[in-house]
Length: 469
Image (cartoon, rainbow, N blue to C red; front, side):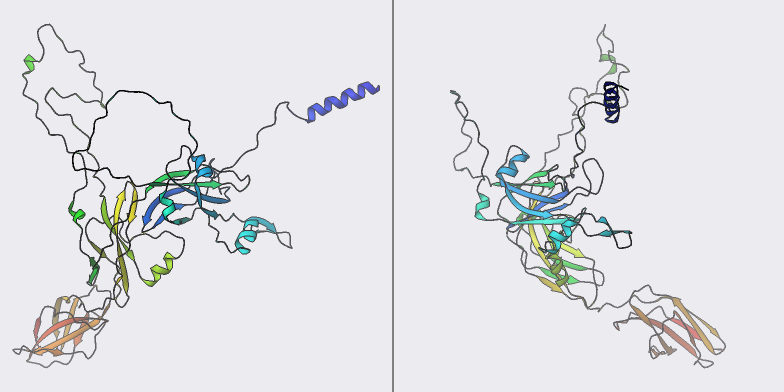
């Protein structure tokens, strides 16, 4: 075979092995999704961000290719999210724990092991690593510097426009202009672990830097067997109704004779045109029907927090600290159903002003503690019945549903006397009793008392009589 022929064969085989011709495909880039459930509030001089760490990538696959979260803030709005990286302040960097990778043990079996991030970050520096999908918080303490507008991107000078339009003075005599409070914006970026690229951002969320209201005072607490009730002096704003647009008055349409609706020679142009989704337009003079609007959100209110030792230790962690009330309180009162006799409960209350969706909370009230003591007797037993049989009397009644019931005490006396004495030296657990210490030709009177574990006695049950024949 000629040398030139062999070279052609090798070149042809090389083309087959290389596959199809064309530019190479771009590598797949995995980016984490943005944080979710992002909420922001101000607590005294701190801005608190609460959110959930992403657990999937933008393509929907998990776990997320996430190395860390970066929280940026800037006083004053910036044109684009990328400007927060250049002109904003890095508030906090939060390293994310990577999913465990398979390792091989001495016997060749795969096992779950620690990641490089665990060894380098978690063990060497002691930094706490966040789990993907976990809820966490970031807190920034405000200073005077944060009240000033931060650096801004350069802008082109605008060409001055000469105009002769006169501007109307809106202020009336006695009014003054007041400065608007500065606004600080917060943005969160997720950075991928494989390529160190930032994924979709969350925010920016504006937080007006207004001064918090005065803290509530004179917090009082009372309790019953089932609830602890808190109350404190209200504020003038509590009685003010939230601002809302006044409803348009409903004007009844004038009575129209159908025979006069059309003049001679006219006809209905849109008969039968309406579909199920359309409605007939009202006649002249009738008010249009408007959809019901949701109730307006209250601007002022209160939040109640657990101030016990266990809640205080939990607040030192990075987890969200939620108020005990599910919704903003619009009246100066709160009821806590967590009553445990002998267990102390402590509370504080914060005054809240809503700035859009951001809650601005005041300093806490003085701590008020209450330790409920069981002084509440159980309900009296019901439906006491007696049946005499020979020289015994059988008693039965409806069992009590009290959770802390210790038992029942049987009272007995002889008619016609009214004084009854305990027949049982200690409470009995069953809702029945057999009295075998009766004598013939005598009439006996019975009542039953319920006793709880704290020693509280109920009132007497209904009274029954039986005569021994």
